[in-house]
Length: 160
Image 1 (cartoon, rainbow, N blue to C red):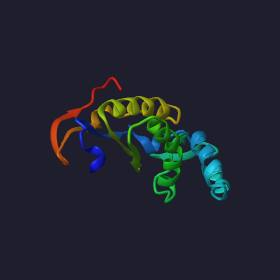
Image 2: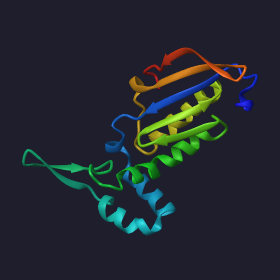
Image 3: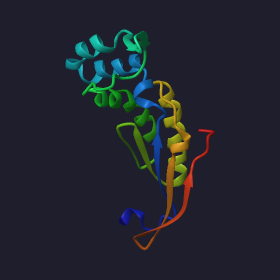
Image 4: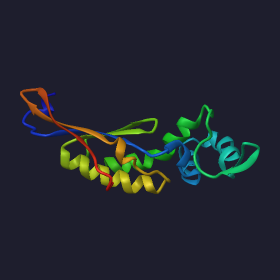
């Protein structure tokens, strides 16, 4: 924790995307598969390069976005699509930007995290994702003598 000595503010923000696995843009996802996992590309394109036909109460539906439920590679494909948005969020701060499934996290100084959130919001829209403002949770910490004292637990507003 020595790097935090003298810091008066730290922020940890958990970001959730609205209906993320069902809304991620398939074209953006397939582009990332082609760029980073070429061996997986033929299979992913076979599954997602067209609209999927689903049945709901014996009526056909067209699934045009997202990964299919129960696809064991769905989380990997989603992560590949989200990766450029996380890179955009991390550019120039915050200190750390990472994700687990559809929950993303930003940490650093409050101004860095706010700027990272703005970049994440814009970049995630490019891959079909929208933030779920009702699920944004943050905690601002005061760092003092290598101890973290919590203050100002906050919820973020709908204007994201």
